[in-house]
Each structure stands twice: as structure tokens, then as C-alpha cells.
Length: 93
Image (cartoon, rainbow, N blue to C red; front, top):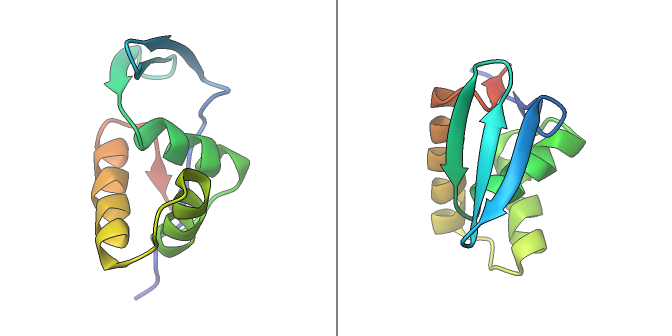
């Protein structure tokens, strides 16, 4: 079984606005609006640079946020990727 690679059309197909420490995202393709809290906007920004699997995204996100990379961080990234895929902001290849 291969590990999925995740990609996004963020920010090119989105409109964003910071509100009270969160990020409001209007996704033009779906017409849906989402309120995102950290680390979701950071994950989308990293995936907009290049598609990544969950392990590479965990490494990049932990480096960006200055967090320790461990199993818990990996589990959080995988769960949040599932959330983002569920609302259509990321796609798995």
C-alpha cells in the first residue's frame, strides 16, 4: 500500500481573512466558508508549496511551528489531513 500524497489549491482558489486568531477561508470551488484554527492554515500553506505525504508534512509543520516531531504530532497531522480532505480543502493522490 502506498502512502497518499496530499495537495491543495489553497491559496489560489481561496480567499482568506484573519478573524480573532482564526483564519476565515472561502473556498471558491465549493462555495463553502470555513473557520480554521492553527495548525490548519499552516498545513495548507505548506501543502501549497508542494504536495507532501503525512510524514513529510509533519516534519515541515513541526519545523515551522518550532514543535518537537513525535508520534503525537504525526497523529495530529493525519487527523487534521482527514478533516481538510473531508471539507475539500486538500485532496489525496
